[in-house]
Length: 234
Image 1 (cartoon, rainbow, N blue to C red):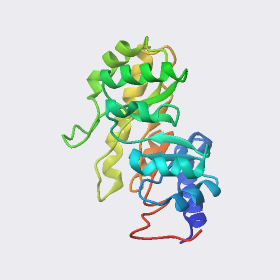
Image 2 (cartoon, helix red, strand yellow):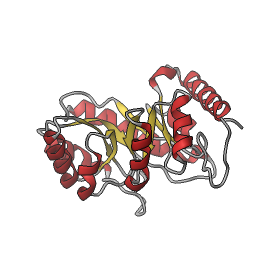
Image 3 (cartoon, rainbow, N blue to C red):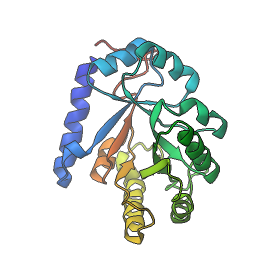
Image 4 (cartoon, rainbow, N blue to C red):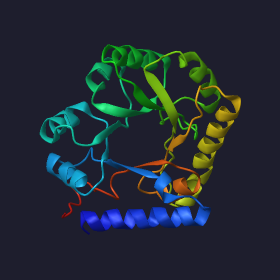
């Protein structure tokens, strides 16, 4: 299947999920996760109109930045070590894995030096799995209150990762839990502006995530594949 065919299929499935739940598909955005594909394949993703690119390994993304210049809007989607913050400021517009005070403080400090503002999602471990990163739901309100005076971090929403399930329907309680937490936090008014976004849903479960309110999907294998395993033509 060509890249364009993959894009068309994903968009159709998003449209159908939105139709089932009365949502506007324009409110659902796709981050193309290109961490497993080459510079050329990432360029093709951009050429096909997918401008939001997700990466989580600096050693992989640096050559892409050098080759692609200022193309794309870059999302950091993996665990971020505090000592790596200096390397991402000015390159990544979005951080999907804000999960601790020390990281927030370092992001704010380095962003201030560059006179920039980081758009951040707080990572929440809704499932409670020990193998998943992120804070527990009952920690989020306190965390948001503690970082509210950091001027160079704009928390725009929450992020979670659901367990991989053979039946995507089994992930629904996870996605619903994140949406309900977001709504509860907005009712509490713990942030200056309401939290708008939910980063949730991957290749195996994104339709359920859309039905439960996802506004950002992180799609890798389904959309761009893994070149070493699958390959695709433009």
